[in-house]
Length: 280
Image 1 (cartoon, rainbow, N blue to C red):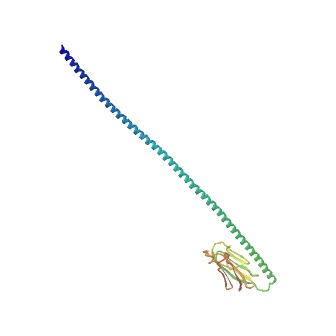
Image 2: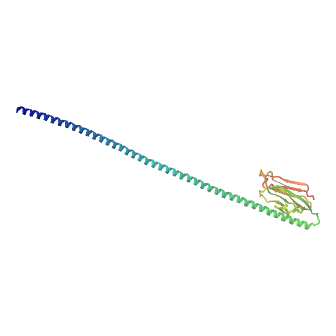
Image 3: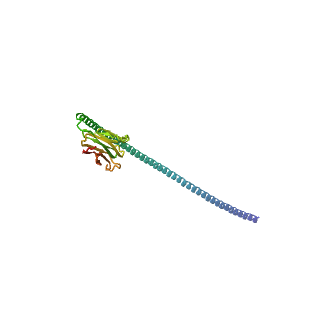
């Protein structure tokens, strides 16, 4: 019985030791599992922390990019605004320049027109005054001629001398200044010869003064007086090429004499020929 009890006691001790060993083994396994779970959880936590860090980095990058885009957009807007303002300034300067040039051109044109108009009025007045003076001289000369003819009807025989005016210019004129002398048309030539010709008892003019239409030719006419020497005056315009009026010329020919006026220093190039012989 004592052996049985002793054996049972030993079995109980062995069983207790086995149970303690099993408990210890289970605790170690559990401890290992806990450690493994803890390590796993720590790894997951670290992973999530890394993910959070990356997410934060990405968020910061997005914020930085957004800020940079905002600054870039503002800078681009400012740049476009500055460019637009510069274009407006350039257009304004161009407009002001155009307006200024237009005003200056208008003033210049008005001044030029006034000067030209004044010159034409002055020239017209001068020509009118000259024509009036010529008309008065013609009337006076005609009156004296008629008076002399009535006073001395049998004193001297009337002489008619054929003459001509040759010209190479834009206008030409011959005038008689001798008492008792007159110009008449040559009846031996056709009327077309006197086209653009104005003839009076004391003058013969081809075209009109300062007409600036170059022409050349020859016009016949008759000089009438009592055979006395006469004084004539010739005037003419410019030459064909306007080279200092060097080429303009007017020549009166009668009684086998030529009276050449190729003067080119004045606007009307006036020349006087005195005591010109009259021979029929």
